[in-house]
Length: 293
Image 1 (tube, rainbow, N blue to C red):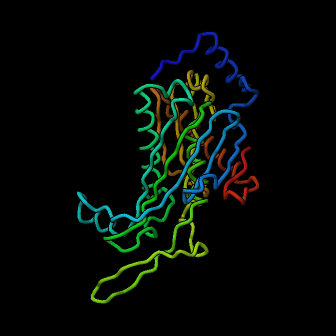
Image 2: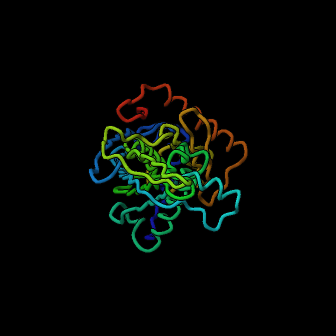
Image 3: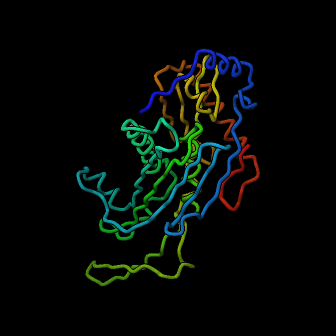
């Protein structure tokens, strides 16, 4: 990964601005940039969305659904029994080298892997919102596999929040063909897929997929929606995943700095308040999402 540096004067300017609750672009510590969200952009995908954060970070997500075998290999009997009745989600995140010099070179693989694993853990877990049992077609044999591919086209900070917003919108836009089960007797079954697009359905539970609110610790303060220069002065990040009901679905800390216990509680509470404020805004019904503040 190409090194990215910031001068001491720049860092001091950012730190003092955050202390005064006035960032370089005029926002307060807990203000997001404008969010532009579009769906249905990729005709060959079952669902897609694109999210632009301000005039910078730009993420495109495509969703494809395909039939595969139920994955129960190498698991304990009790776990295998659960997996036999579920579909699964396969995630892949790629940061384009043209988006930023940070994504150039072999070191970019570490960023791609970290983001891919984060999304996979959230969406395949019980807190992910998706009803994976509804993705099972024939228990123990066939299921729907949801492939989610995210591409970072441009970078101006705050990739994680943008990635989860785009993924949720893409899942809202996704339509899955209806599977028609035929009982052949003697315990044998087979299925056909309906070609009538009017019978296709959204993935159940998409509306409960969590979004992320990333809090960046800079000095003794914390901010949301950091710019690249602000991220360079960040000591630690706290990614908090929260669903539409305000339930915290996961927390992940990154960065080499530490977060004091009292500050951690304050940051989580701030995240909860930010989500509550979003939920009170008028919903964007077309996208199944909420307007940015």
